[in-house]
Each structure stands twice: as structure tokens, then as C-alpha cells.
Image (cartoon, rainbow, N blue to C red; front, side, top):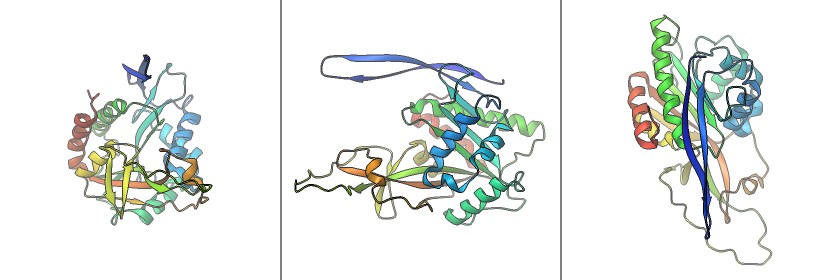
Length: 277
């Protein structure tokens, strides 16, 4: 195991009478092939959302775990538990003969905001990262910082990670009007969400599940969102309500960053979210 870093973070809730705080100690680990398969597969399913069924998630999890010295997981109760978050990078060129990478590459090309670089000398690194929805954002900067360090070590050992571009695959959401019947009762007007993690895209307001994506795209050569290919029931947005009046429609999101801009992008994420090393 190449890393084991700890940090305490406070989380809690406040009522009119009192406020309770819980100290949680987060630890960063290398991916563990013997331990992390099921937890990693669950996080991949969450990341890919409705389109997760298009891919062999078992094969994708195995591929991530086959490079345990690259990328990180975040855990709470020690190395033997499931990860609460992960971040890794995959070489689409090195693994181009694997079926799951072929499926992913075709999918990315269908939805990319511009033509993606493919053949040498271009070398695309796909960054995959996800975390449980209640994880503090401060866990993110150390994962990106450690990835930069690990890539430098890998290149020093002549490993095939000399990327020319990084593609961050992520997800966003939009608020949509509820499909639920009003039963003749007039609904209150929708409340505007106050958030620094929102932007305009396509004609509706886009919110970021991962607030660092808004920072990363400022350093990208291109970025954009896309609708998932897998159709969901009309009431699916109501089942994912974030607010009382509005439903939530998740969408895919990509940011393409040139390799020489990536370290600056990571530094900006550290400055924005805090918790950096």
C-alpha cells in the first residue's frame, strides 16, 4: 500500500435547540484488488447513472484495480471496508483491446463536446471519480494531488502514462417541474437554488454534483453535457427530488483538459475546495 493519509472532518446538523457535531476520520488508500471490487462497482454504477447498464462494470472495476499504484480510494473505518470515494485515470490507448474500454471509447466519442484525440501521438487519459453524495468536498483535492504525484512516479519508471489530454467524465443535473398531480391544490412558486456550483448550458440551469467540475472546465479546451442514452420513466425526476417543488434530471458531463494545463487545474481545485496538500 503506497498511501495512508488521515484527516478529520466535521459533519452534523443544526436545529432550533441544539447542534451536534460528529468527527469522522477519512483515510486515503491505494485501490485494493482483494477488497474494493464491490464498493468500486457500486460507485461506477452511480457515476454512469442511467447508462451504467451499457457497460460491463465488473470488467471496468477489475481494470481499475489492475493498476493499484495509480489512483486513490477514501475510506472511513480502515482499509478492510468499502470505499466511500475513488479517483483514477485509465489509458484508452493502452487498454484499447479490452471490450469495456472499446465500449467506453465509442460512448465518449458519441457524446464528446468536440472530436477527441485518439491515435498517437495523442494519448487520452480518462479520469473516473465518484463519491457518496454526503461526502465532504475537501476529500477531493488530495486525490487529485496524489494522482499527479503517482503519474510523475510512473513516468519516471517509463510506464505508459504520458498523456497529452485528460478527459474527466462526470455528471450534472437540471431541475425540472414535478410530474406529480397537484390534486387541485395550487403549488408554491419554485425556489431558486443559491449555489456557486451552477452554470448555464443549453437553455437551462445546470448544477454540479461535483463542484470541482466547474473549476476544471475553466482550464479545459472543451466541455459539455449530454443526455443519457438510456430512457427512464417520466416520473424518474420526481424520485430524485432535491427540492420540494422540483424534480431532478441527471445528465452526463465531460471536460477535456490538455496535459500541460492539468496541474494548473488541480491547483485551482485545491484553492476552490480547500483540503489540499
